[in-house]
Image (cartoon, rainbow, N blue to C red; front, side):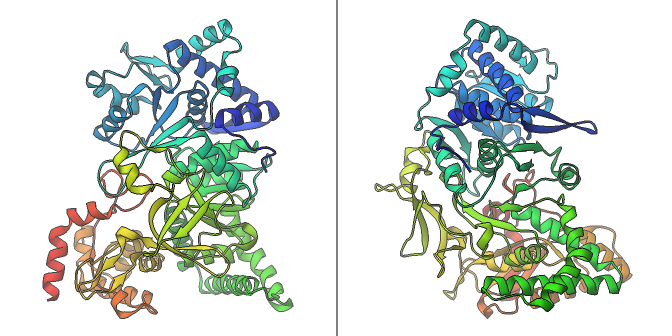
Length: 602
């Protein structure tokens, strides 16, 4: 727990690096070996980078961009900019050059940190048009024959010289920052329109750390594994600032593809992830068990069902009983311990955010002794509004509201929130700011929700995602999508049907499973396009949808669907960098297919 309330992130950094000087702060992999940095080493590096920015002429309030994959260098560039009284504008490394150019120009960045050659080249390609950019700082020291480029090693040398001439300036400047000063600009990936630059202050992030730590526990003994983009506010607050604030160690995954291996290497105690991560882990477990012997399959499901039964009893406040406890001991030894080992063996809990978590997937992991604490928030709210506590984790909800946050439900069901976590506004967009924050300070989230009997918040759906059929029925797509995506046959799904007679969906099959099934059936195909058009495949997905949607009202059920031969991706523009499907992009891209599907049904 925080021993005092920090008003600024700079103050937090100074205090923590003093207190935990000799303790491991960051871990990163070089080749096959994990390297570590202590807090005092991080402090030294941050002071040099910050002083290097000073020697380049950074002024209070100047905007500095960063486009890089997660690393200890990203983290230190952030603290260096912040302590120099600058404002860090974060840019996803997965964005195209065109998208990067728009953000850099809109954010009016004077300097840009680029993680590697690829990211630096994106910026250099439009540098003649971006006159305000003075230097591109390459973090991995890739050499460029360009006067606009400066290597991190050179910046450190400049910083060392500047610091020797101004020995007290770093801490003096850092401690002079006010809580209402802007800390960062995070551009919302958005599912519609141009991104908006969310201005978050030091006070916004500091209050969110303090509020979150009253619900969840984290301390200097914890190890975080960071793999969600630090450009996203969820990882920035929880896996970066919050982790540092308690003196925890942060290890940076090599890439999204190595997370499973990295968990086994560093044995994290805490991790943040988005639902897509849990869906993939779940699918892999189910795939593996489906090919095991019948004895192993029976043991696995016997264990999972026992775990679920025990969790249900605990939620109701009822005793588990001696017989079930004995059963759980056997299950833990033979099944659960192996599943827990796959996430490192020492994990206390996962924190989930960024999108809705399937209740079924949450139940599955909880039954196996792996807790996923789902929370809720937005970029504009720094981000956390609510989160489930470990001691009373209610799946299907996003937990109780943080103690320093206000929430009320509007007459139409929209969630409104107010408090120190609300952004300062959208950069250079007063009109958009006024649309979401009213005169009394209430922020309109655009989400529909309700409180349960325990005061836990449950999210129904995004307000703009609600499907209203031509018959006037209101359908929330989120619950059905959450159920269907747990199927081993479905990789991605997007429900559609606004102003149409019935609900339909785009489905991206789980091709590894579908192709194995089709081979076993001795079906003939060459391409995925041919595979999804086979009548046997259509019959399979008819059954999957029918069985998955038992319990839904008739007007809520997916009546027809379109199988797609490839996944929605960030590169195609169909996914946001935080892995949400851009509904309007997908519907526009496949408009002809949608029209044909509904016209054929008439």
